[in-house]
Image (cartoon, rainbow over all chains, first blue to last red):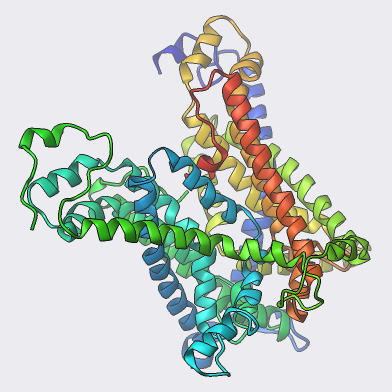
Length: 305
Length: 310
């Protein structure tokens, strides 16, 4: 910015000392409220959780200071303690694959076949995403109930006791349903920017449809695909509402185990250790994501946010 | 296998419509893509349609359709619990949206003026606040409130407790980050030459901000405000852990109903909630379209797009 040296704009090139002080004051005042919020409601709670994870449960529940690794040891060595995490992991992986299978053809259609109605298709995807997650989830209780689709499917299968609600299948469907738009948005953005002449060139060179898809479209869509996967995987891993509603609490995920430890058994230190575990899983997925996007410095402008 | 049916030179010419392959599978693929898209949109909208439809159900059971009735809206609006939850929802969402928008916008502006190292640290916190699962934030915030209120009340004799202020404070964390990211994206994409031109014409920094920078930020600020309001209005997870007695919001009411068994009253309340949030989205679209037209278009500010590309 060459102009900055000649214009009396705000910045370090200000000469008057008083002005500089006023500027610094203004800058501080601008970022102080947000900074305070981050400090008190993000850094402090997370720090407390980390500290508590090394403590022991007070006799009446809660936290008693200590310095022990017991909570982590229990989490890692007792299979029934680790199980919610394993279930969450499988559910999140299956849910991500589900979103991909449902979302990729949709994004492809939107990017290549929607023509001038692209904006409308995007809007139609934003509307459900914008409306209450809770409402859209509990509605499946009505749809999959025995009086409606659940009973109908039972008749088809020929089993009057057939149930979907309260099973892992219902939870999985809820996950895919809830997070699908987060997968489609980045996929659509990458596919929409794709150079369509590449596909045509591939076809003109005699490549089969599948080969074109595998060798041209898929590599181009890969950054969007990874972004979408990370965007759905992370919240699925920490999901709490969907298993509580559609799984009747029987599919016990990490989020449910966390609530159980903090609220029901009031074992804050063990709950804290689980929370730290969950945070570590998130951070490692994001680290992997950043590494993947920057590898060979071919990272495109499709970031997590 | 399809041989190249077109001359090589024609490949460089952009067809007006995406060219479809010539192998015999192309028809099948086109039909499949179309059917898939239709089904997915049906899948996305079915639950919303069902909730709205069953809110007009005459039957007392939520799950069997018997006939049309507006009765449940009367029941819901006359229900003291619903009235209080509705009032609480607005008392949470509105102050949250106002303050989060203000603080987030201020921070986005301030961060342009700080050393790079501080900015990176701030950004890290912004991303962490969004990436850490809501349930972890909710529980750790609850532990913070419970622990610190215990101390403070012991020392000072105050009677701090969970309630609407704690819900607002907890919601604001996430919303400040969202506003900050939206406004900053706009600041980065902004035309710097206008600001420099303003300075060259001897405008004061304040006047430049008011007449040049701020108008360009309006779409992002509006989107941030509406997103914050909607998030707060719809939030269940954080709210349920940091709310106290008497501060239940609509999502908490609905969750409680769902646990006991959905009734048409639940659906009526849910439909009213859907109306409020969809009105927000519509207002956003209209305001942005209006501001784009006023500033001579070009910016292409579109609510849906901003959310989709967030």
